[in-house]
Length: 442
Image 1: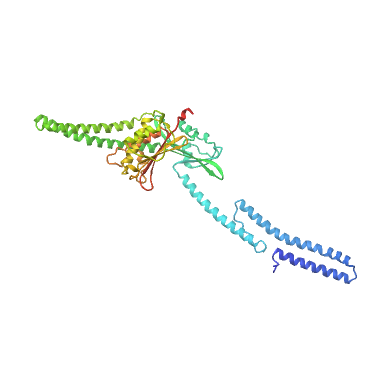
Image 2 (image 1 turned 120 degrees about the horizontal axis):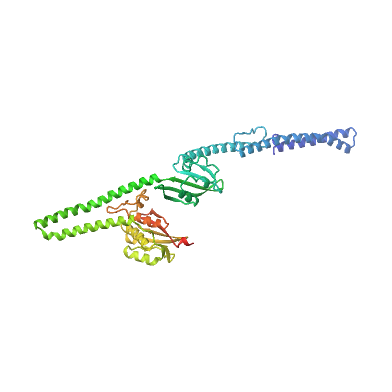
């Protein structure tokens, strides 16, 4: 095996060989001069050992400098400084380690630059967001916020301030909602005007620590405009229905008046009166639906059996129960919940689905009961799911657009949510939840 002089092992091997040769030569020379062997050995060791220590110290000092340089480089990486580069040609023993250090520092530097650029881009997006964004630590102190948050909270400085000290300028109803960590749409009256805010609280992990993300926005103007648009649609729809009914009624009434005045074709009067009666009945039913939607009463919550409810609804719109009922009863308004099931099942049967493909599944989810109605009909066009729950929106030619909207209001009054989702192999799933028990007494 060949040992290079530049390596630590090579240096030590060569040095040991030279030391032995020098020791033997010195001992042999002293012996020739008549010095006893033991004395010659001692004198040789006394002369050679200092040289040994000096040379060893020089060798290890050189390697220590290289190791110290590498250690300082690693400390600089730890401190976030990736600009230091180490020269590797002075020490062959640590060449590979020094080269790996330089590559590592270069890679970390590039990765850090890439991360910094992404963070700057993300921060620019967050700062330009129209929604207020606030990040809270475990003690509910603000550690990050965007420009919209400072405007909504009406405070120029938020960093490090507890959240409850930053909401004192907000309306009391909104302060209470934030303190209770509510999520969703918060509406209330203030100065005779309706105010609406969207709130969202989510738990996130950052630097291996739990944080809470608050997203909120004042949506009063947007909702007001949406309400105006809905009322415009309602007025157009009601006007259309009124014209469709009143125009033929007016025409038929004129014809009947002429028949009576001229005493001609009196045998046609019963048919004319029957047609007028049908149109007025249709118009009365149409107006009654809008009155029912506008005056939805507060739910009369009580415990009711589930089996009789589903059995009664199935007499009107048959369906298949996919699994046994998980519980015997729940806490809801019987009449309103029956109306919800009737409206959803009616839509399922009118969606083009076969009657055998209309099914219901009931699942217990902690303190809630989830009810899903599925079919194999035409479903809803992607992007229109949120509109399907709005009043006056309908995909049917003769639809009023009140069925699902009424269901949404009833479910919301039961502290639940209704969801629409297209099925993969065609059809629609309508899912909503109701309470299992009275939570006000717990």
